[in-house]
Length: 200
Image (spheres, rainbow, N blue to C red):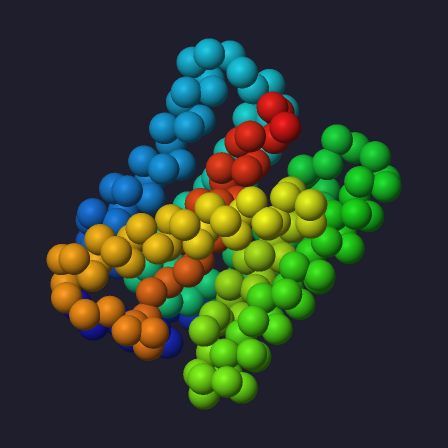
């Protein structure tokens, strides 16, 4: 089903509904990836109420962004930017120094993926990543801190490669220009690293 990418600039609820209806398998996989780890931690009483509330906010935003990106190949600023701001306020343990570190980490993370995108344009003639991915990566840094981003990228790239292999085996040829939303993988990497936080 062809989706008009411009149709869902601000109507994020419609984008989520479109993702659920047009690609139920992706919806099932994404929602399972978010709910099962939390259910496990809750069952074994491994997380606090404060951590659970912050996780509920972060998980809901990451889940929404993943579904929107699947449906529209877009990551709306209306979600990514507030997520980055809230990360500086909700994620740290409360110290001013930690809040400032998260605030510094976010623009650095954005610059990293922005540079990757510009490099693709320079050498390949097309962007390998969208600026929405860079903003989501910045939000990731705001919630986790710059030091955890290598693991986020490792999880994101590994899961993306696995999906590409499965897609190639089922759908045939995959090229460097095959469009695949990277947002869900970044969100997944962020989510897993966040859940590992209490045990890091």
